[in-house]
Length: 317
Image (tube, rainbow, N blue to C red; front, side):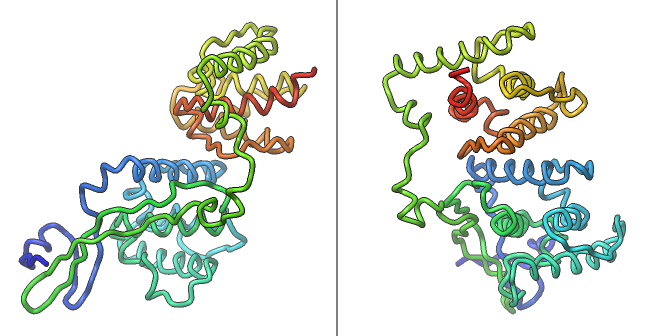
């Protein structure tokens, strides 16, 4: 264990009270690619959920501390209606609002002992990333368990405790997400693997053959619109051609006002792809293990899964 002078931590704004123990993320953990991926997935999830409220989150640390986003998120995900200020300007008002919101969240999550929570009003209001992550992961797990977050994610942390001798720190490891359902439930391992995942394990020649077949199917349907696809991963990343393709093969017109025909931001692209996946799911064409952000990030496997679902359904036509 290592002792640190009390005034040093106070200067760093850690806000450790006498007799209190807190856990902070190690700065090195912020560079963890899986942690960065989790943060982005949570941001995307919030933005998609609150699309109708026109609320856009860009930073988990900076955009959730005043309670506004959490307030709307809870009301959107549940039947809870809270009587709180819409916008809390002062710190006192923010703390009061967060108290009401977090009490309602904990009640929905079935948490009876708030002392055991890894988040609190104080931590969220102080923009504590670790506490914010724990809270959001718990909300996803409860309200939208089908959303697949990165599994088995652990981060390095430092535990701080104030004593009469000063502040003592101890390094440790904190678990953010649990193991995936397939690992936790042996029966899931017996399920058939996704055809595209199996395909990508084959010889490159076989992969290219299937890609060409899918590409032919795509172009046959979008050529009447004056479009041509040559790069499967890149040209579907903004969701525009994907939406037009769905409209063509499913036989209905998607109003142009419902999506961005010329998206200029990653958020608009994400909205387009999310709409496309919603349309597919509404047609009982469930595409497993695909997150909208996978398509916008030009993940070829994810893009192929979407196109293969359409190809499989409509190839006989």
